[in-house]
Every structure is written in C-alpha cells, then in structure tokens.
Length: 422
Image 1 (cartoon, rainbow, N blue to C red):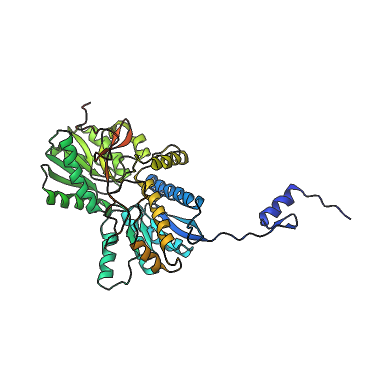
Image 2 (cartoon, rainbow, N blue to C red):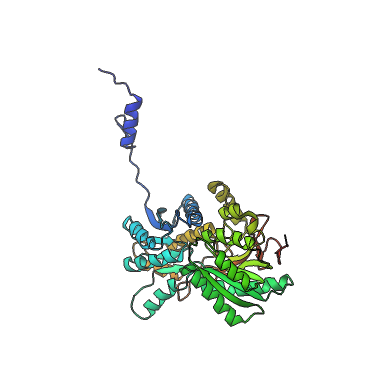
C-alpha cells in the first residue's frame, strides 16, 4: 500500500478549500449561527473621517459586546454589521444605504452628517428598512417623515433618532450660555455667531437664533456670519467678526473649518472673553486637539457627552482608548455605541424580525435606560421620532483634554471663564 506524504502545500490547499475537508478526512459540519444584519454607515474617509471612524468603532465595540453576551437572546441570533462609507459626500448616504440593504441589511444606523443622513431617509422609507439615527441634528430629517405619515402620504415612519435636534441644541445652548456666565460672575453682552453654511450648520444656527429670540437673555447675538464648507480661507469672516466687537464668539464648525478658524482668531488678535460653541464637531476630537493645541485651550462647547460618572462608561472608554490607539471616547463613539444597544433592545422586544413594521412597533415603545451618554431620562421616541431626553453637556478643553463642566450635576471640573489672558 502506497504511503502519501502530506506537504505544507497540500495542507494549505486543503484548508483553503474549506474547514470541512483537511487532507482528505471530513470534519463534522457545524451550523453557522443566524445573524441579523445592520447597515452601519458613516464618513470614514474624507473631511469627516475622524468622527466617522469614531462612530464606526463605537458601533463595532457595542456589537462585539452584545454578541459576547449572547446576542439577541430572545431570538437566538447575533448581530452582523454591514459597514458603509459616505466618503464625506452627502449624496453617498443614499448610495451606501442602497448597497448595504442589497447586501441583506435589515436595519440601518448612521450617519453622523445631516446631509448624508437625509439622503438615507428615502431608502429607509422606500425599502421599508428601519433607520436609527445615531448622530445627525437637522430637525427636518425626522420631522418631514412624521409630517408625511400624518398627512397620509406615507403609511409608516421608519426613521427614528437618538440624538439632540438642532432646535434642542439651540435651547440648551442659550440656557447653558446664560448659566455659565452667571456661574462665572461674568457679563458678556455681545455674541457673534459664526457657522458652516451646510445643512447642519444652517439648522444649528437657526436653532440658536430661535431659542435666543424666545428666551431674550441678557446677551445679544450682534452678528451671524456664515462661511462655505469646507472653507479655503476664513480671514474675511474673522475680520467681520472682529469689527462687531464681540465679547464671545460662538462657532458652529466642522473639523476642517475649525482648523482654519482658530489660528485666524489668534492671528487677528481678537480680544474676547472666550469661545463658546452652541454645538458642533471640530472642537474636541483627538486629531483636532493635536493640530490646534493651545488654540483650543479654554474653548467651551455644548455637545452630547459621555457620562464619566458611570463606572461602566469608564470601562468602555478604556477599551475604546486601547482599540483606537489612545483616543477619547466622545460624542461620536459614544452615541454610536449607545445606538447599537438601543437597536439590540428593540430587536429583543420586536414580535418579528422578518417584519419591518413589527420592528417599528418595538421602536415606538422604546424605554432604554442603560446608555453611557448624558441623558435627561431614558431613550424614548416622541411623535416626531426624536428622543426628547437626548441633551448636550457643556465641555471645556482644559490641559488639552475635553472635560464636562456644566450642568453642575454632570461636571467633573470647574469651568474657567473668562479665559485667562496670554
């Protein structure tokens, strides 16, 4: 009887062909666990790559944790992410949503940028694929769908959001501005609003201006200055701001515009009490801190933030730091992490995972209280599909780190305002 020698090449060829056959000896086949596919779409390349990558990692970490704990236990399935990249192009929201749905995604989550998220909505509604917005603030994204359903133009709303809206950002910003000025025993009177002139920036600016008009605080918005996003130069806009003699500059930025804005403020030597943002990216991310250094020191901004008084948040933040190469668990990673757990909660309660309307019924009844972010209550969805308990926190860059400083119950350090003079 001839003896056959097993070489490294034949072993690799056999294993490459499949685990059921290794050098001629069959192994027992094991049934692959069933999965529920979720299309997770963010801008992981382009100008918004840093926050987009944070969102993707936050979502992946949450899915890993859910699966490690047994997945969707009531249904005996695990989660599988089908990821997409909008490349920081709003129109790609629809393109990527179509692609992941064609690859079997039964739910969608995304997408950080309001423009690309708005583009995803049409796919969610037309294809009947429930969409949980983890990050995107423009009010019309959900409001337009809710109105369409109410008027009978569409039967079901498939779009829900666990993130503050632009109008709620505006209300909280006016509240927080007034409170921190009082807390600091300071009396700034003249605020210049500056904002990126895209869907997000326009919506955030309108929200702040409407809230300011309604509240009539002791400080005035003396000028509102937009810029094209992404900008190539902001010297003209900063000159205009300087001419308005502001006590405070309130910027609504993107990461790219923040990289131009703050050096220009320093270059033109604007004498202000401080920079206080009403809510936007670009003022706290690790890459921004590394690039802008002292230009961001003492900057305040009202953003959704993690509850670092929660021990579980700190444990997840440490894991995120390891997996991200030392970055901070922030707005973007945190809301995407929570978003995945909200989805898991919905799937546990849904009467059927094969019927999108059954998933929507479960979404409407959500009452999730185990999130890691700062909320004003459990995650619930109102008649517009928004979570009214999604609220921002005022953070400040202190010693090159973003730290919660307001409201008092969320604060980890005392705020510094006005900023010290150089």
